[in-house]
Every structure is written in C-alpha cells, then in structure tokens.
Length: 305
Image (cartoon, rainbow, N blue to C red):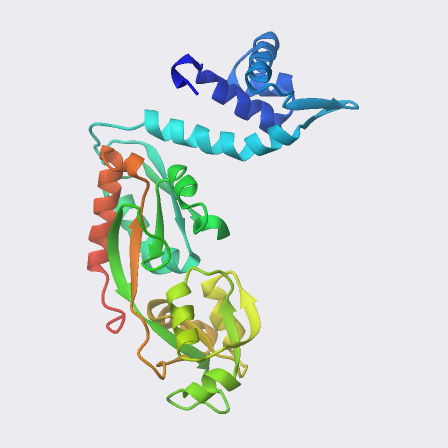
C-alpha cells in the first residue's frame, strides 16, 4: 500500500459514512455537500472494491467489510488526530486540550482524583477524560494505546511499551466487620473454604497467578467489574475479597468492612502510566507524564494513609 497516493481526507469521510450509514447525514457531519460525500463514497468503493454501504429497503446497512472497517476507521481517525495535534511547545497555564486516559475505577479513585486536582490548579484549560480499561487491553494493547493518551495499570499485565512508575500499593483482604469466623488474621484454609468476591477482569493477573501457585482455588460466589463494588459485596456476609490496600482503607469506613493481611507474602503492586511510542516526544504528553509521576511520588505510602 502506497500511502503517498491516498487522500487521508477519505478517512474522515469513511468514518462518517460508516457511523451515520447515510450519505446526507455523513456530509452534514463533516461539512460536505451531499454530492461531494457521494463522490467520496464512490472513491472509497473503488479503493476497497466493496459497496461498504448496501441499501436494504429504505435504509443502508454495512457490508461485511464495512463492519470490519467501522472500528478500524475510528482508531485510525484518533491516531491521525493525535499525530497532527502534536506540539513542539506546551504551556499548561494557557493551553486548552483534553487528555483521554484508560484506567480501572481503583486507579481513578486513589490516583486520578489527585491528578485531576493538580491539573485543575496548574492547567485550568486542560480536561481529563477517564474511561474504563476494556477487556481487550492485553490482546490488543497497541491499538488501544494508539487511540488514547495513556493507560494506568500495574506492572505484570502488559509489557514492551514506554512506561513511567507512579506509586506503590499492596494487596490485602477485606472481610465484614462482623465476620463470624475471621478474627484478626486469615489462614490459607480460610482462603479455600470461604466464599469469594472477585474482580472479574484479568488486570490483577499477578495476584491471581500467585494464588494458583500457592494451591488456592478461590470459591467464587460473586464477581463484579468494579473494584469499588467489592466492599459492598463483602459487608454483612461471610465472603472475602482481595483488594488494593489504598482503596480498601478509603472504602472500609463506608462499607462496614475491615482489612485483614494475607496469610502469605503477597506480590508487590506498582501502578504505572503506559503510553504508545507515538506520544513519546510530544510536548503536551511529556507534561502529562511528568505531572502524573510527580503526583504519584507525593502520595503517602499505603500504610501511612
């Protein structure tokens, strides 16, 4: 494929056509007349040798290839937008820009809130948009990182991308304040016999793998896709859950749970900021990374909070 022969404006037209599935609305969205958008669709059809949009009754539906291109075009558009918005200089006090960041609800609660506070004070025109880390992050890391400004995630899940460390945390267990059979400590036998609440995604993979190496097979009774829901599923029950110490201490007074240390030496947890190499030399992104690292370094240790 010779990119020099392609009109990259067609990426804008293609995205609008695939998402709107209507030539007139797609043209209105990108500021083109209906004839101009029809001409763009014709060029795209010749390039892909496919109709992309097929009329079914009184409306258009995507062809099989059009469906494949729908997600790819959105990603390509985001990459191009970020590429051409790169800056040689960046003044946080005067700039107006949005950074899109992927993070778990845990990372937003214990770190994102403080990052947002600092950004508000130092760069009032900067906006932060946090989105939940998708389940495909491990399988499609490059694509996801290319379409966002970065990812907050602990070490041990992904690799081979630029990264800066933010802060340390550790794994603890939580149980109900009035748990009938757990006093000040858990035993390995407790881990096997008591029902669990788990975070249903795999981002805490090192901690989960450690349990398997210890011969512990959690008896999962409830799984949720939010770390902050774990204490609510623990309160008033016999269940146990593995959770980050910073978040546990933040939520324990609210959810009537208490923190119990693991009956083994838990793997360390180091939260980090990952990004795609395309952002490495962008002045705005450098400021974002340096600010994030500075905020992370100022967080108190989890035992001091």
